[in-house]
Length: 262
Image (cartoon, rainbow, N blue to C red; front, side, top):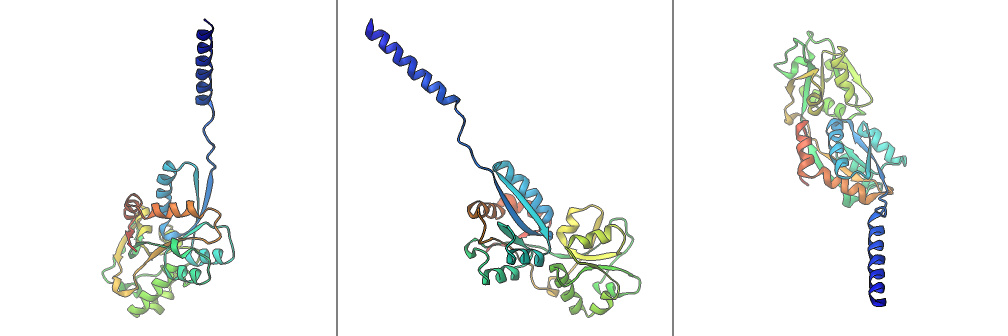
């Protein structure tokens, strides 16, 4: 009888221990915020991709800041708390790498796109030839200044067409980021604008009048990297790897951004 009572007590104790173990709280997973500096060219696509990523990684909080490439480059150079960058051009990444401010092994070449001329969706303006941007019938053209990547491309295109001076004389300037070109056209401040295709893809209030021939500018190569001072380099690298995935690329393509495979 004593043996039976002892076995019963042991069984009860084991059962109680297992039950208490099953009721204990799971290990705490610390939430991590990743600060990403991203070019406005990829804004709409990245916002959609971030929603996908956070569904699969609920402990990762993505905090993107969208601005012109030069602004983001300067922020890294000034030591702003960024974990990663996603830029619309490769040359700023080269400059940051030369200064030892990013992790070279983390670099990714991600997407390319087209440059287009846009007008308001209800505009009657037509454009059969890009030289018509200089014609008297167009009174205003929205373009980025040379501090913006889109402005650098626009300047090169207009120069190669031989109409830079004529267009600049009636320019509505975007000075902060590429989104200002779209806003100027949407709000009627400019009849047409020169911008990246993703801007036109993201908004129904504008339409594409013409796609600029790629012969008129150097190929667009958008790239990303982990910032060297990031306190979360592994998490940032995992996010960049996701940006290179087929799922993320499908979202990029929805907004007019085609994959670059490096």
